[in-house]
Image (cartoon, rainbow, N blue to C red; front, side, top):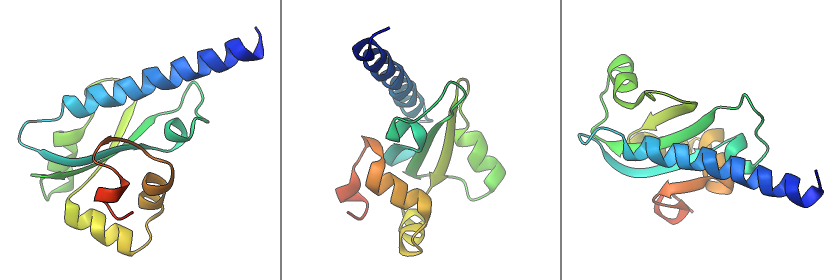
Length: 121
């Protein structure tokens, strides 16, 4: 395989994972008002491997307060998506505290809903 073919294949794999993240966000319950959704981690950076999860931060209104109920709202029904769900207020607090996940989203994230300008950059 030539280097060009390797790069083409790698881009296609990343695109497939980003498409899976988009389908996940599109399938979130209608009871949520998604203000932001961003792929972070290895898929966003492009250094993922075969076993990598697709890490998605969701910022939404309508999230349950109870961790268990919140998880049931946003848990991926299938696939490798691993969500982290915050309210806009929780995002703002995490940003204030220099949370590494927020920094990753702002610095390297692939935004599916919203963008860095909407969330502190």
